[in-house]
Image 1: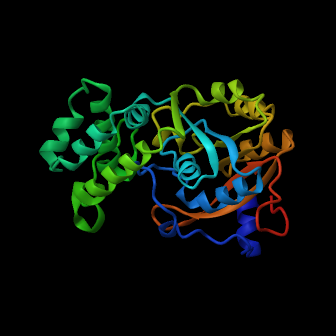
Image 2: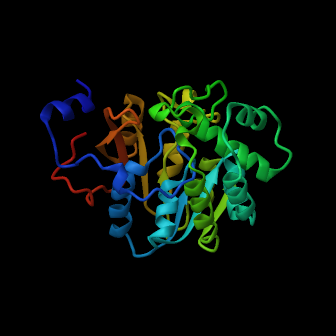
Length: 296
């Protein structure tokens, strides 16, 4: 029996499923594998550490909900977002690089139709900010928010609204500008996440939230999904500061965590289709979790 099956069979209920609707939505992305559901646990983790944390580093940022939450809620003095995917990076570089107003206005002025969407997505972007808009549009109109090549456009969409189902221009514009207003607290670098962890590994005042492409669904969801998980764990084991990792519950990952003496905990979450799933939380010390004992 797997750890997940045993956990469910035992009926453990110390860790309730988070109501995602109650968590502030900060990111302009609707990211597959996004961690909005984990935000309450991240708050507990960061509040357990020195307050406020000097620097939070999110080396596989994606939609960056954890880094954004830390910045907006003052849980870290500074946040460093890292992303290797150049299309996702274009969004963060545009918002944090002085072009947020242009992006906000472009979002507000765009009318979603099949023709207008195809015109944007089928033409190569001529500038970084146009690439950013193209990426956000693709993220919003493709099925499941999947940016990987081959993902098709939504058809019926939510409540039969088709391509407009996830296009909320006023909301997206507001999020873009809110993030831009925190440019003095949030920085971004387009780079390999593992290399950045190694670069900052000797700093005891830096903490890492590590959410790499998962072992099972990564290739389907992300353009840059290949990662050496063994190398990642070896690098993380050397960091002077604290860290929190989240993974799919895979035997390979459990073995790596055990080999490095890390603690693990299964956390309940709901998928985008409201199915209950379990994900693996990994750290050096998970005593701050509101549970009586480790289940894995």
